[in-house]
Length: 384
Image (cartoon, rainbow, N blue to C red; front, side, top):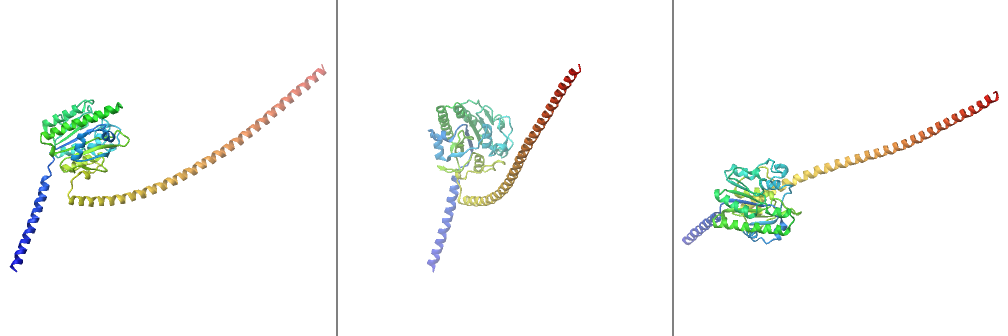
């Protein structure tokens, strides 16, 4: 009996230690997830999927292995660079944010507004020559470079400006590839991509040398595709991101929501994007909650889609009836036009007959007058 009691005591102690060990292991896993001290969003104008996969870009591909990536991210179609970049920074479409040119005002909340509201410092390095000046919040927070600045000039200025104040969020726009595309020079375009890749490698090395790399979130993409596929590469590296992982179904308007999810803030109010969950490290509980949320959303979408289908069917029926009515009216018009044509032809014939009759009458009268004149003339000559 004492042996059984001793066994139960040992067994209970073992279970307690196992639970304690699991808790410690869980805490260790949590502790291993490093905080995000800095965020770098690098947008490369003119970088499309075709140019990316056709090029040797070792530094971008290194980041892809270090984090989550996709070379088939769908970019929003935009007529201007300003509209595309604003969609990237707000998650909203152009008809909502209204920022089509440098002279327009951004009408919706951007990720910068979210960060400023939560006391996070920002830096914008504008390599367009001022086209993104709508996001200038101050002299220390906005650096403008000439539009034809090279990748090296922009990345050097970006790291220099970052080193001075160490802002939490930095956004760099590089326009080197776009210029080569506009010149329709494929060799120059590929050379521009390789130049950017080299500068990205230098930037990453600087972060590593300063001990910031492991606690930094780095996103590299292009807000607008310059190819018919509308596809661009997207690379996301940093704490909380999957390692050497692919992503599917991502869009550029999802970038702002994904960043906000990783740093624990609400996405911009007008964002149409969603977090790219394929890039995120999620616990089993988070996955289950996410799956439950998606199921509910899909059920709502299913009902909404059916309601939309019913409305479209009603609209189609109304359109068919309207088209039938228009067809009948058109036939009536054609019938009326035919009747009018026949009436016109009849009137023309009648007028022709009447004119002929009048002409005949006039001819007869003239003939009578001539005959009368001849007879009278003979009569006067007879009595002369």
